[in-house]
Amino acid sequence: MNWAFHTRGWDRPRSSLGKERPMDPDATEAVLLRAEGRAARITLNRPRALNALTRPMVRAVDTALTAWERDGSVAVVVLAGAGERGLCAGGDIRAIRADALAGGRASLEFWRDEYRLNARIARFPKPYVALMDGIVMGGGVGVSAHGSVRVVTERSSVAMPETGIGFAPDVGGTYLLSRAPGELGTLLALTGEPVGAADALLCGLADHFVPAARLTGFAASLTDSEVADAVHRYAEPAPEGLFAARREWIDSCCAGDSVEEIVERLLDHGDPGAKEAARTILTRSPTSLKVTLAALRRARALGSLEEVLEQEYRVSCAAFRSPDLVEGVRAQVVDKDRRPRWSPAELSGVSEAAVERFFAPLPEGVPGLFGDGEGSGAGSGV
Image 1 (cartoon, rainbow, N blue to C red):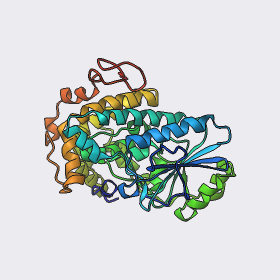
Image 2: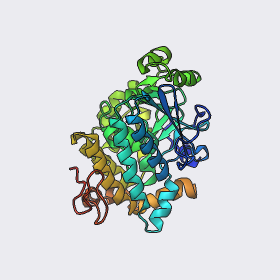
Image 3: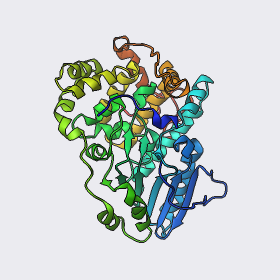
């Protein structure tokens, strides 16, 4: 695997499933909704922005799921992305950076709605089929990988790349990655590197492989077929991935108790891939790396997705006021110089107390994620 940092998803996904129109005339054109046969379809429709999520988009999807959950004519929900590059590149991080620079709070409201949607998708009582074709990053993972039927293709590129922008995996990402086999999730979280179909399946981020050429047929079959029948007809074994042959060094190296120990083990290992992974990690935000590792380890001990989302919400609120998020987005997608100036610049400069501040109770006046409480302990999941 090439461990060089990928930013193409942020800079700029697959064909729409037909000529959809919003079911609600007041709904944003950025989310297209339609019912066809027994299937209800959601198409994220910002292809020039690689379908990056905004708060109105999140709310439109949530409203649609509310209606379809109660609609007896809807047997399955299908999620896809418009355009030719992928499902979704995540949240609109340019807007988040602008909000942080302006001292706003719109991003906190966006995350609250987004994380609640992630939990709703995970608990949706009908089959929720996510077509994870092309780029699926960050928030794109949140609206797909919590679904009950997750389909990847040979074009899939799935990632939680937050440490590269001074953030930490969210949208339930630490829940998913903490439950991946061995230490695969730890490696993915720290490096932020994308994986293809086979490795997404191995890591538990997807369920089935359908060749891209057959994806339209698969989606169309859901209008009049049971999901299991459609999967049986269209799914195939995925092409060979990379992680199965690398489990020995991934599991042994990434089991370290600190980021420093993990990096040291990777550098000392004889496999060139391990050294390359270490070099990649060392380009990421030191603060984000330590917060991410702590979040993963804590997520393993938490019992439910909702508890982990509560933890992630606290981390995200803290990261929003940290210098590395603004700087990371600047370096990767605004100025695109790919030379972030992290603060602190070294792992040794990030203290345990600094990490603990990311897990502190929510700020005063910030509503809890699933309760009505605010700040001062609201939403504490650990």
